[in-house]
Image (cartoon, rainbow, N blue to C red; front, top):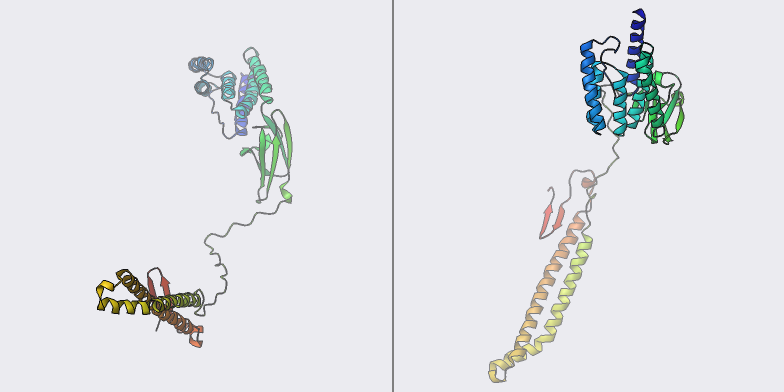
Length: 348
């Protein structure tokens, strides 16, 4: 009786410590097969048989669930083995590899009490794990001092650092963090069926910056010195004055050209048409009249552009900063030129 109790205690310790190896897999497990009641055995066997049927039907996710339910009633390494195989068939190779290692440990502990039933389970777990060994990579981390280690994003307990950890083949990140905030990161390429040893030494890494004190206000950033003398960010009006003046000159030239070209012809036609309409050339008269109109419009446009040019020049001259404006006491008037509007704003 004492021997069976010792075996049970060892099996429980082994199973509970192994479950810490991978955070994504936490098997609760039921009572030990050694102490399970006939009723528990019957319930667990029913779920195990159901899982076997689902497994043979290639319904691996449902089979895994059924084996898990059986394991939750009676923590038999046999149902645990089938759970690992179901994971393998779902391409969860890393999880399956880790679970097979736990199955082997559980079965070894129970085989000492019931060799006929669990010795074969040990062999099956070893064979399955060796087959998976060719499809996963292994990483062994050697860290100096008390360091928290993660491999491929999963925390690795300190007692697991002495044994290889299964990883998906490819680029793997290993991070070590010390208690004082030092951090070391390594990347290794692990191929299928290969193993890598990684040394982590965080002592050479700089200390992490201390976290800001709660409630402490950070000083505002230094702002660049700026100067506003009244002319900053203003657009010069001289280019607009030059453009409007040039257009005014062109308009004046057009008006003069049409006026000079048509005046004698137009006056003669008007006199001739007044004396004798039969001798009046109506087409020439209309052309002369249109030339006269063009000349008048050109003179009007030239006058308007000239006035605008003068206004722009005057405002630009007025915008030259005086001593008061440089001290910011009297902003100069500003001209706002936009689509379909011209406006003047400022303080007076």
